[in-house]
Amino acid sequence: MIKKDIPLKLYSNFKIGGPAKFFAIAQNLEELSQILKDSKNLTPKVFVFGGGTNILFSDNGFDGIAIKVDIKSIEANAQSIRVGAGVLVSELLEFCIANSLSGLEWAGGLPGTVGGAVRGNAGAYNGEIKDKILEVESLDINALNTLERNKEECKFGYRISIFKKDLEGKEVITYVTFQLQKGNKEEIQSLIEDKINKRKLRHPLEYPNLGSTFQNVPVNKFSEKQMEQLTQYIKNDPFPLIPAAKLNFLAGLSGTRVGDAELSKKHTNFIINLGNAKAEEVKKLITLVKAKIKNLYNVELEEEICYLN
Image (cartoon, rainbow, N blue to C red; front, top):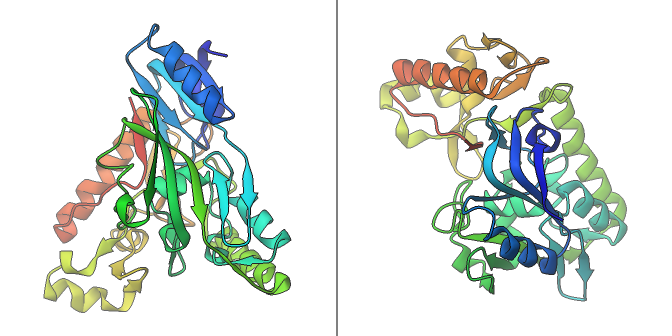
């Protein structure tokens, strides 16, 4: 069940990452508990992840155990659906279409797993994953007991939750219960496909990437004088923001490269792997972009991606 020296780039959407000293895939709660229990005799370092769509793995790998959560079940009843954290968002949306369930159409084309989307409160097109959540179940990594939290207890915010902040490295999401409503199957499918097509047009999906690199910036971070120039770019999603992609574009950063890591010309909040990019090159590019935006606007871009060093 637990393997040794598995290259993390095999499980990265970015195709970057050295070997994990120990590695395992958990397909249900029992397996996850057993892997965590067994790992206590191997290493104190534990990293649990889902789809690998927004994690920059180190070139040197990870000197501990990396555990991929691959819990794939979807259970439906009249009022709600209980979804395993390892279910891909795309798989959940296919289930919604098949069962005429409405409420998550905005997530069409969203990469990654349900667990990852909930951890970071993923959102787009004026929707956020938290909007339809009833309950989140998690497993304490050390005590190995399960916990349940309602939406309020999860402390959702802009691209954040209690699991990404207070409980980072302490608990792992296992199941999420959503409350969706019955709708018209054709309309649901049409809305989802519309979002998928918009992403294909705007995002450089032809290259390995980690999705949005930086969070969009709240308008209150800018001075009144700056906002005179930036007002036309305000995006209300879920509150007034200036897109990081627009700031990067205005700063002339489109196409900036460090090695094989490039800030995409197609969407300037995506860093793409042109072939053989290294994690250190990506980090240097991120540092360069943040410094340029800080110098021009006196604001700190915050990463939406996370790192495993």
